[in-house]
Image (cartoon, rainbow, N blue to C red):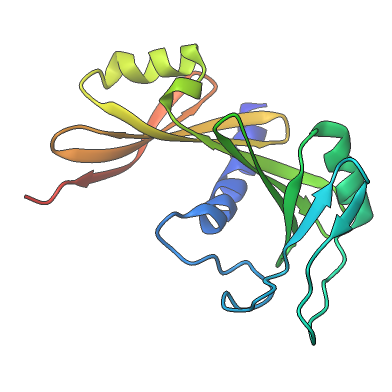
Length: 182
């Protein structure tokens, strides 16, 4: 089980990192970033339909109906939908947690990323990180879920450095470390 988890997360984490880097442009959009439409479609849960304001000369690529149905069964939120290279992404905010849900071209769930601050982090994960990095402040958390496995990427900092801690199955690994400039 552990080998299977590692095999899938090593492929899923780089994919997610490309999609969610806060310092890079999102290269996964089907159209250029300056495109006025940028393939966004709002899904309205009350009317169970998609709607978009389409400028003249543009067309909206249809989101796979199976993806929309799967989304509506799991989440009770309105979401902005985006077509990405390998499928679709639904984005919504709820209670201070930004959630991105990924589907393949056939509408099957790939995984999700939840991004939030320290106060939303599960107590056991926070305790595990704080027990080793007690002088650090937890800035931000990305929670990656795929194939019923969850990995936490915890962004922390102290007076001299920034670090990213990966927490999975009760084990911590330091994946990034940067010194602050003086």
